[in-house]
Image 1 (cartoon, rainbow, N blue to C red):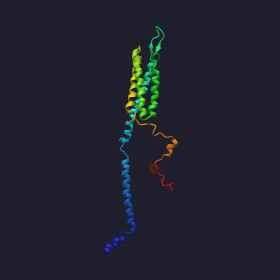
Image 2 (image 1 turned 60 degrees about the vertical axis):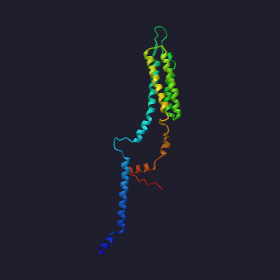
Image 3 (image 1 turned 120 degrees about the horizontal axis):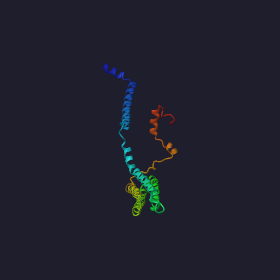
Image 4 (image 1 turned 90 degrees about the horizontal axis):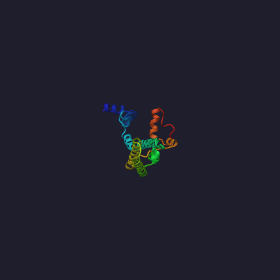
Length: 212
């Protein structure tokens, strides 16, 4: 009885509270370390969300590359001499196939439109782009000229047609790049409170200062 009484008296309220606080701190520390471990990813292991975003953007960048390459090929074909000037006046590809330069300009404009537009509008954009490329291909095939000039025009036309087909088939699935765009002032106003709290702790500042 006396031993039991001594043991009960030796456990003071302050020591009990300190033990409870230390146990709670250990639990909270374990939870925070678990959350930190779940957030921190091993080096070299990509984030699945980042990979998904990159895969969604691939068709759009494919369209941009196809249109740029197609425009360059069409402009190159337009600058080549298709009819030598030995027997008369020399004529370039732009003079023999008048649609080369307009379709090249259309391809460049379609790049900006593909980036700025979204949804069904982007899908519909693929129709005139593909039709314009097909018109150039038909004109280059039916026009007499050097093999280099006609070949370059056909390559450019095929690239433009391919870009139009990708836009028509995958336009709705492509991300709208302007959706998350904000002005610098608006971006500064949008602050994640939790992120700001941890940033302040990392800097060694007291995140509770300045709060009501």
